[in-house]
Image 1 (cartoon, one colour):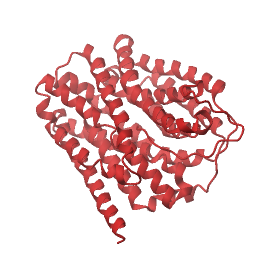
Image 2 (image 1 turned 30 degrees about the vertical axis):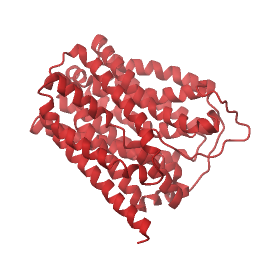
Image 3 (image 1 turned 60 degrees about the vertical axis):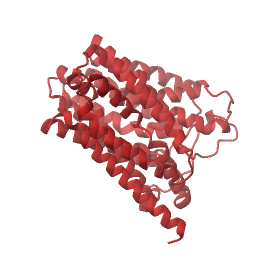
Image 4 (image 1 turned 45 degrees about the vertical axis):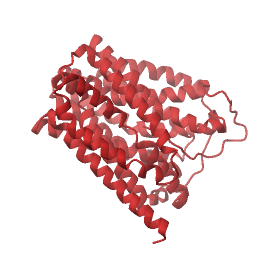
Length: 413
C-alpha cells in the first residue's frame, strides 16, 4: 500500500472535525488497516509452519498468497463501486464482521481446503474495506489533515509488516501458527466495538450508475499505470512470498532469527511507503510515475544480483533489505495518476479509481507468487531474483510508454 490522495464527497453540514489528528475515530480507522495488513501478510511469516502443520508442500502453502491476491484484485473495484451505493458505516461494519468470520475460520481450519476458503472470504472484502475507510476522511479529519489521514490509513499496512507480521510469526513459533490468527481475531473484536463507539454514522455519498463507472478503463494512461504496478509488485513478490524459506534455506539464518529479519524488512517497507509519498509530490498526473522509471531499472539490476548475494549471509541480508525499500515506491505516483486522470476524463469514476492501486498491486502479488512457486518447483528457489528482474523491466517498459505518450500529448500530436 502507499500514501495517496482520494476525492471524497463533502462532509455533511453537521459533521464535527477536530484539528487534533489522532482522534479515536482516526486511530480506529488506522488500526483497521493494520489488522487487514496483518491478516494479509502474516502468511509470509508462517508459511513453513502452515506447510508442516497441515502436511502439505511448501509451494502449496505458498499458493495461499497468490490465491488471496487473485481474489482481492477483482473484488476491490467491484466492491468499491457497489459500496458507494449504501450507507457508509453499515458497509464497513458488515465488511469487518465478514473479516472476523474469515480469520476465525483460518484459526480453526482442520485442513488446507478450509484454510483456502477462509483466505478467499478475507480477500473478498479487504480492498473494499480500505476504500470505505477512506470515505470517512471529511468527517474525521480537518481539511489540513486530509492527506495525512490517507497516508496513515495506507501506512497501516506497512506498520503491520513492521510489527504485526513479526509478532504474529513469534507467536506462531511459540504457540503454533493458529495462534497468529487468534491474535487477529481478538484485535478485530476490539476494533468492531470501537467502530460502533466512535465512527460517524448515517452518511451516504453521491451515487452514480454502477456500469458507467467502469468506462474509465477505456483510458490508456490508466492501463499504463495499472500494468506498471502489476509488474512492479510481481517483481517483489516473486521472492517475497518465499522470504522466510530464503532466509533459512538460502542464507542459513536460524529459525529463531527470522522474525527479527522480517521486522527489519518491514521497516524498509515502511520507509518505502513514506518515501513513495515524496515521489508523489513531484508533479501531477503522469509526471510522478514517469519519474519512477530509473527506480524500476535499478530494481531489475538488484534482483538479477540476488542469487549471487545470498551466497554470503551479510550481502544477502543487505540486498534483501534494499529490495524491501523498493517494494512500495511506485504506489503513490500511480495513485496520483489514477485520481488525476479520472478527474480529467471520468469524474464519476473517482471512487472506483481510488481502488486501482490495491487492485493492481494484488494482481502483481498473485502473478509474482505464482511465478515464484513455479520457479521454486522447477529451477529452484535460488533463481527467484532474475525472474523478478524480468517483471521490473516490464514495469519500466510500461512507464517508458507513458513517458512517450506524455510527450506526444504535450506537443499536441
